[in-house]
Length: 369
Image (cartoon, rainbow, N blue to C red):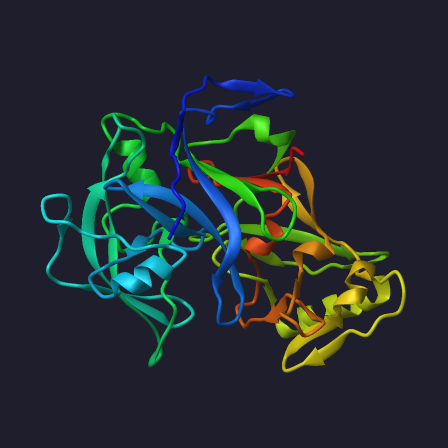
């Protein structure tokens, strides 16, 4: 069962730090967040935040590629399953929530299909502040004909053309008459390490949590938190490609690239290791012996910033995962066919990221030790 938690409500004034104005610094809604295994069948990691709805403590997967919010619910899943799930379940008790009678079906880009009942309940910011929000209560979670391990999701992506579940949570909180947050922005961070803790902050940033100032980058295109990559550096080598873009997708575990880009990246890594090690392809996934992982180089992405270049480092701690009891470690470089890179939550540890919907900007800084 999920441990009890508190949802923190922080009020702060506009902050000027290192010459940079943080107008979205308050008020903030703070949600505790941790990186943990969310699917024990194949050790998939995720960013899980805690929040309270109708005085029920729930876990949610923090997902920057969808605007939808939905919870595993007791409408379809058993009480025993709910107790064992890392997310828990939302129980809709008579008189405390409202649900539609007809289900809504949503299909995601990877073929995952969910069915939900559109629901309403209170977000428990404090004993006095409990705004009514809308979300989905999950009925099923299917990929093709196979039922997947279900997730509850806090969607922090751009709104879609068709407003499923009415309005994304950020917009609901900004538009509420009580003005629980003032800015259509959020930020998140994790301490360094594999199983680490941090926060999601709805409404802005907390400069006390990072080594300022934030390096700001423009978001390209529509519908994604997409950045422009100028170059990729590994050791003494580099790769430059015109028009290369990367999407920050915290719902993904790994770094997904087109096939040729992955080959080029592995070539740079092999050339940049501190000593020769065996980097082998096994079933479509690159592996190394875990005893050799410390010899792997740091990858540096040079990104287009606001008024200059921004560097984001990805050390081996953030792109290597150990396989249980095998002695082998997986390099989290996987193929996609999208034509751009997709970087998952594994790059978050040690970093502070800010996301601003209206300015269409992402900021990055190192987390304070």
